[in-house]
Length: 176
Image (cartoon, rainbow, N blue to C red; front, side, top):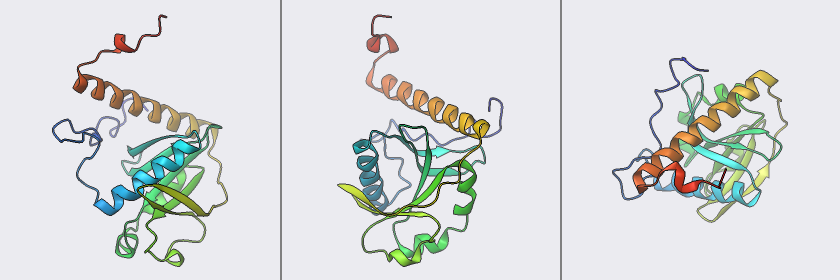
């Protein structure tokens, strides 16, 4: 996707001027609790994930995760019923994932979420999958493009964190 108009336009998730550089200030405390629970959920399953990943459309996925088998999951975090009702663009994420899941807190009614998507209830300590969805498999070219976007964003964020910590890539050399 080199040269696309969205490649470098993403708002960085790492903000080096805050006490916690991984909070960019756009999420409510409720949404951050759900994100934390989802991150634990994916970590427990040996999946890798990135919050706030900009897609080729310019839209930002709340979380994109890759399963050990390479399946692409996008999680849309909804902190309230009003948040869900205000979002009319979630359909657009389907073309960028094998599965689309919604995650929310336990006090948001589950029946308000689309039945053809996955549904998880989360808090800051973890998440539980209440309903999975049928996968809509990505074609090979789209999957490769998404995996590369994920890898590039991961490397960029790692470099920013290392720079903030005063580290260089040689500090992580494994003797190659």
